[in-house]
Image (cartoon, rainbow over all chains, first blue to last red; front, top):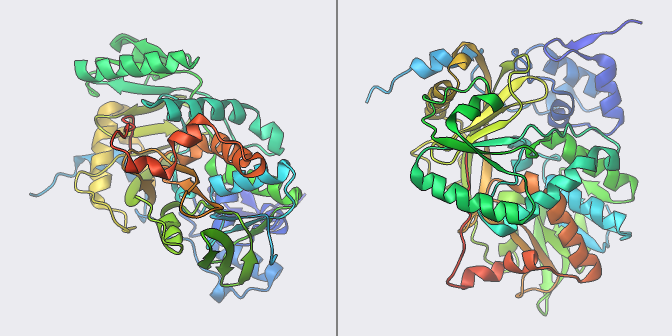
Length: 90
Length: 383
C-alpha cells in the first residue's frame, strides 16, 4: 500500500492526518497535539505547510487563513552542554 | 450551540473536559463546554505531564492518590490510550532541614495508604542510573513507585471525545463575553456565538478564571506565573522516574516517545501575563540538568515553551460553589498541578453538582478559606 509521509520526524502519513481531521481535529494546534506533527527536530518546517494544505482540502478553510502554530525557540537543535557553557556577562 | 443547559463549563482544559464527561456519565442531559481557543490550549497543553502523590498537604495528597486510582483504568474507561505509566517520582533531599520535612510528608502520605520510601544516597542511582548524586548534592531522596505520567493532550481529547459520545456539547473558539446573574444566582453565559441560559456555571478557565469571576464581582486570589519548560530530542529509554528537587525547583523525566521534558523557575521571575520564553531559562535549565545528569550534555534541546501556573496564596486549588453567587462553581487555582488531580476533582464536583453532595476536601478548598487566618500552604511545589 502506498503511504505518503507528511511528517518525517514523527512518521505521520497523509492518512493519519485525514483520519484525525475526520474525527473533528480541525485546528492545526489540535492536530499537532494529537499527532505530534511539528514536535520533531525540524519543528514543523516540512509538515506544517502540508498539513495546512490537507486542512484546506478537507475543510475549505483557505491556507492563508489557517493560523500557524506558535514558533518555539531554538530555531535549530542545540546541545544542553553548549547551552550550559554559556556564562552570564554580568 | 444550545441556548439552554443544565451546566455550562468555561474552559476546555483537562479539568473542564473531565468534568463534562463525568456530568454526562452521571446522567445530565445538557452539558456545554465553552473554550475560547482549542482544547488543551492553556495550562493543560503546556504542562509537564507528571502525576505525583507526594504532597505536603493532606488534601493534595488525598486528591492525587484517588486520581491515580482513576488514571490506572482511565485508558480502558475512555477507550483511548492516554499513555499512563507509573515510573515513580524521585524527590531529591539536599539537607537535614529538607529531610525533616520529607519525613513528615512521608509519614502523612503513608497514613493515607501510599507506598513511599526514603532512599539513601547510594540507592538513588538504582532508580535513575543517569543521575550524579554528588552533582545534585543529595543526601537522600523520597521515592513513590506508583507516581508517574500521562499524556495531557491525549487525556483531554479522550475525556472530550467520551463526553461528546454521551451527549455533551463542546464548543471551541467560543469566547465568554459576560455572565448573567440576578438575585445572587447565576442565570446564564453570554458568548460571542450566542447566549446560554443556565443555573450552574463552572469556572475552569485556568488563568482567565479571575477575569471570568470578576464578571459577577467575585474576587479570586489568583496570580499568573509564567513557567518555562523544554523538550530534548528522542532517546532510547534511559530512566522511568520523574526527578524533582524542591530546593533547585527542577523537574525532568523521559516521556514515552523518548524525549526528556523538564522545567525550572528562573530567579528573576515575577507574576504577570508574560508569555515570551527567556534565555535565562535555557541557561538555568541546561546548567542544573547537566549537573544532575552530566551525560545529558550531549543531548540536543529541541523546543522550549511557556505556560501559566494560576497560583493561589496557599498553592492549593479553589473548588466548589462560592457563597456570594448561587450556582457559580470554581475549578481553578491549581498552582501548577491541575492535570494530575483532575480525575478526582471532576468526580467531587460532579457529586456536588448532581447530588448536592459535598466533602471534607471540597470544604477545605472553598474560596472562603482565604478569609481565615490559618492557611496551610502546600510546600511541595516545583517548576
